[in-house]
Amino acid sequence: MDCIFCKIIEGELPCYKIYEDKRIIAILDINPVNKGHLLILPKEHYLNFLEAPKDLLKDLVSVSQDLVKATMEAVGATGFNLIINNGKAGGQLVDHLHLHLIPRFIDDKLHPWAGKALSDEEMRRVMENIKKII
Image (tube, rainbow, N blue to C red; front, side, top):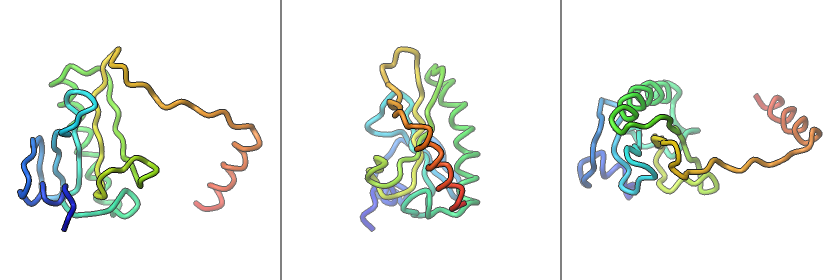
C-alpha cells in the first residue's frame, strides 16, 4: 500500500509516536502548525470520516480528549482545534482518516475561517435540504 500513514503504522517509516493502543496511534505532525500538533489516526485504513465505523469514531474522540488534555499541559496551550479534513476540497492531503490536534496560543497568528453572509432565504433552504436527508 502506498499510504504514508499505513507505512508509519507498520513501522516502515519513522515517527514521533505519542500514543498507541490496539486501534489508534497518535504522532507528532512533521510539519506542525503549532508546537504539539498531533495527528490521531486509526491503525486500520479508512479513506475518511464517512468510511469509518461509528465505534471507531467513538474511540478516536475518546482518545483525542485525553491527548488534548495532555498536550495542552505539555506545551502550555490555552486552546485547541480538533479538525478532520475530508476530501481534496476539505484540505485532506493524506487519504487515510486522521484528526489534527492543534494546540492554540493567544497571539499565535492562526486566523479562523472567514464567515460568509447568506440571506435568510438561503439559510432556510439549506436547513430544509439537510432535514430532508437526515
